[in-house]
Structure formats: structure tokens, C-alpha cells
Image (cartoon, rainbow, N blue to C red; front, top):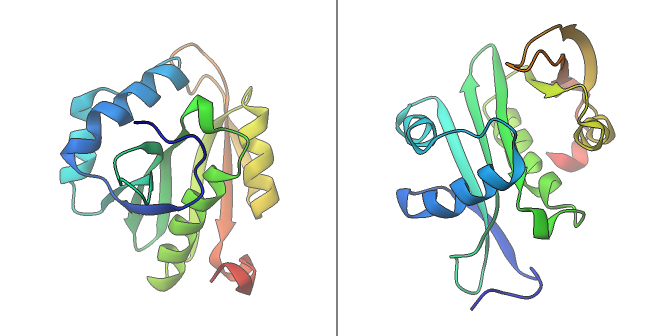
Length: 162
């Protein structure tokens, strides 16, 4: 039975059993969704992390997910998505805080990401957290859309997030 309100939630590493829910959210959310093979490859790559946000009661309702590369020169945020029915509740920040905390623990100097220029809501979330726009990549996406490149230096992260 699906939960009505995500009162108690946790972030944990994704497993293959989470893939059907991740793929459903991905297809509902992105104009160019990742494939199952893409997610599985990320799960199998040593420096890649795939996390899911789930309910504590059953640990089976996937509310959102996060994919990133943890490398010495910087953490690269590849994909963060919350299921449409759970948006607007601050859940993406919970996922992003997990990414930020691991980056700080690993003493990695920065987090970088690309976001569609048209995705004003996501840009607003990133800027609220402290990401800064560094430059644009014209025609970055297959439909020709520009990507905004953003960066958060771990030296600029408020101590409360650490």
C-alpha cells in the first residue's frame, strides 16, 4: 500500500530491486530519460553513487533518487529527481544534503553540475543551497538546449550542513 505522507524517510544506496521505481520516476520526469542499463552501469561503477530516498515504514516506496560521481578533483552531480507526486516538500534538499555531506567527509573540494537553462525550479534550489553559476554550455542537450554549469565549493558550505 503506497504511503500517503512521507513522514519518516531515509536515504540509502540503491539496489537492483529499486530500478523499476527509479525508471518510472525517470520516465515521468525527464524529456530524455536514462535507460535501465545506464542506471545499472552507474550502480556497478566504483566511483559512482546511486542513492534512493525511501519511506522508513516499508523501505520500498522510492520517493526520489540521486546519481553522482565521487572523484578527488570534484563530485559531479549527474541526476537528482523526486517523483512528481512528492515534489515541493523539500525532498531534493534531503538528497542533495547526503551528497554534500559525503563530499565534505571525503575532503573533495567542490561539487559541479549541469542543469537545463529552462529548469528554473532546480536552478533556484541549487542557488538556495549555495551553488554558483560558473558558465554555460550552449547546445549541451540533444535538443540544443543550453546547460548552466554550477559549482559549490566545499569551503563555502555552511557548517550546519556538515
